[in-house]
Every structure is written in structure tokens, then in C-alpha cells.
Image 1 (tube, rainbow, N blue to C red):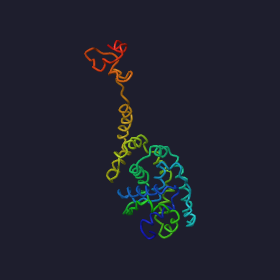
Image 2: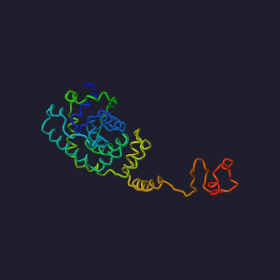
Image 3: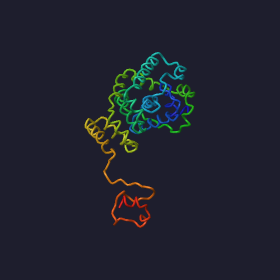
Image 4: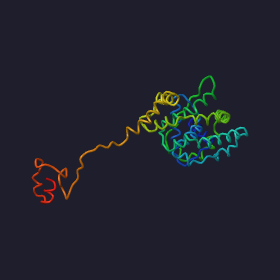
Length: 280
């Protein structure tokens, strides 16, 4: 895997600073990376991993610090300075209200992919500037591949040219305030409503992702979202209707405590006299 394009992308996790023990989260990050690739956005895997993991349920307990592989690679001073700025930005993003709400709402992978598209997409496009765009390489979705990836990061990182990764890292350091603001500008009501729909709000296709991205960007959609959130509680409210209470008295005693002789059942002739007189 060392010499493969996927190995190059995975080795970029050396620059990530959100560390979790669950290999399934790394695989989910690969799924987010592949989803962004569908819309032609080749954001480095390490950036997708850090921002995306913060929006998951395990993001609140994640350790945010530099990886051992980064220290072993001995990056130049300008890269170290950019990593410090990126580390501070990630810590501030982790405390954002949007991330706290996302962790509580347990968003689907498709919806997290749309959030990453909105947060990282504009910054990555400004970093590339005009001209041709790089092609993203789909990453494998095998959890066993990511189970013991940390000891391999230094080898995977050192085996490839990292000029593109460090250039984007420097751009993120320069644009860290814009990145934080883009996280804060996510409309929480829209995010909550889409999260409530679950699979029905899925953005599995590229067109689905772009449609949901337009929902976050459209001012008209906010009015619809607010109206929907106001309407949902009344739709789901338990309805109570008045009616005749029915219950059993000393075994089977019919459907009501009082009745007429026309509704008399033959078996009720066997009732005690007191109960018969009380009812009829």
C-alpha cells in the first residue's frame, strides 16, 4: 500500500491532529472523502478526517494533538508553524455550537459529507485558484485496513512528495478565521431538520449533495425550515378523544357498566343478583 495513491492519501493523516481509537471513524472519513470526490472536490484526506470526526458522536472525546509520526518526520519550521495554527483552529472548531449539536444529533455520513463540502469546499477552491483541478483517488472502505494504521503513518508519509499537502496546510493556517466562521455560519435549524429525516434526506449521489448544499445556502429555505420545525410538534402531538370507558368487573362483565335489556347477553343471566340489578 505504500506506493499506491491510496497509501499516499492515508499517509497524509500524519498532518491530522484529531485522534480516535475507533478505526471505524477513519473508515467513515474515507467515505466522506469519496463522497467529496463525486463532486470533484479532492480535499486532502487529513483535512476531511479532522473536521468530519469532530461532527460525530465520538468527536467530543477525541484527543486533539500532533501525532507521533509528525514529530518523527521532522517537518521544516514553516510547516511546524502552520501545524500549530491548524491545531488551534481545530480545537476552536471542536467547541463550536454547530459541532456540539451535530454530535448530539448523530448525523448520517451523507449529511456530514454535505457539511464538509460547505465548510472546506470554498477554502479549497480558493487555494487551487483558476486552472485544472486534481482528481481525487477513491479510498478503500475496509475497516481492517485502518485498524493499525498509526504505526504505518511515518512510512506512508515519507514515501511521497508532500508539497501539495503542506501548501494546503499553509493556506488553512492563513485562512483559519474564515474556516472557523464558515463553521459558525451553518444554520442549526436546517441541520436539525435534515438530521431528523435521516435516510430520507440522504445525499448518496452527487446531485443529492449539491441539492442539500443549496438548502444550506438558500435564504428562502430557512423560512421553510422554520415553518416545518414549528409544524412538526403539532403533527406528532398525541390526540386525545372523549369516549365511553370500558373495563372488566369480576371477570368478563360486558363492554359498559350500564346497559339495556335489549343488549343483554345470555351469559349475563348467570351474574350475581346485586351486579345484575346495578347494571340493568
